Length: 117
Image 1 (tube, helix red, strand yellow):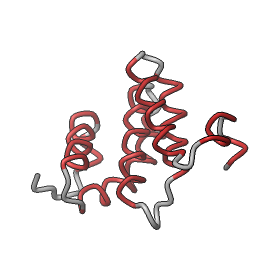
Image 2 (tube, one colour):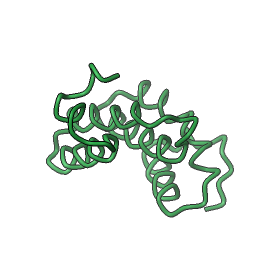
Image 3 (cartoon, one colour):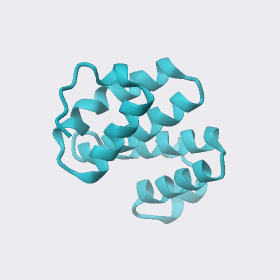
Image 4 (cartoon, one colour):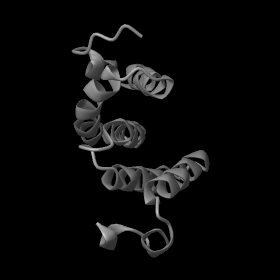
């Protein structure tokens, strides 16, 4: 995984995921969706889904939503589907916001999840 990281991430920060995530948000705000998608995906790759399931699912949701905006609907669905049950099981404002974004963007992906939010 280190080889896939930009050098500045691989060398200087102990919490790479937060730094990469902030870069992704910056790219998204500037309209650089391809760069944002790459950085959101890298954030997803950094977080271990077995130990950090909530933040991994949040990163996967952000990656999937950007991919959807880029017109990569099948790729988006493949990363969103495993994240949705994790997000639905959590009781937090961030997970609720991500589920709302997914519902607004791709409601068919939430058809199987009964979400009371």
